[in-house]
Amino acid sequence: QLQASGGGLVQTGGSLSLSCAASGYSFSEYNVMGWYRQTPGQQRELVATISNGGNTKYADSVKGRFTISRDNAKTAVYLQMNSLKSEDTAVYYCSSRRPWIVEPEYWGQGTLVTVSS
Image (cartoon, rainbow, N blue to C red; front, side, top):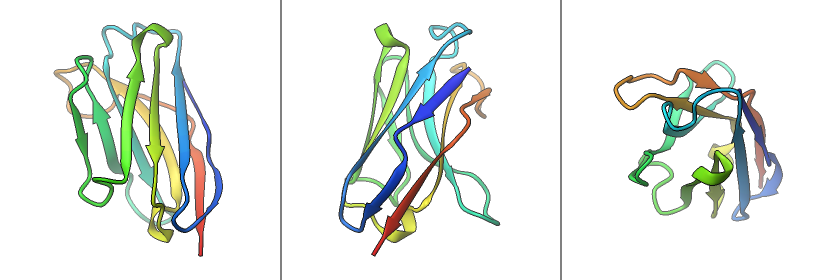
């Protein structure tokens, strides 16, 4: 399972850090970790992914503001969010998958991030 934490309320321009701890499955096998987000009535969208080797990908909307990282020893993935905007308000989900699978195979429970002006 994946357990996400760190969401909360922050003002525009502020920072927030999300964490996600993995357990109960092979972290080394399902080693592409990611963060997605979803707002009411919208599809879940990709925010960032990181491979086992540390290669990262970001949505254009968060490039330069968000940083994804991982700690394989702790089987955890993180998302540092800076310069937050109101449009970053969403429920954030962490995910994992095997490298050859396109879509996430495991999902965390979601953590709410609210950015207020």
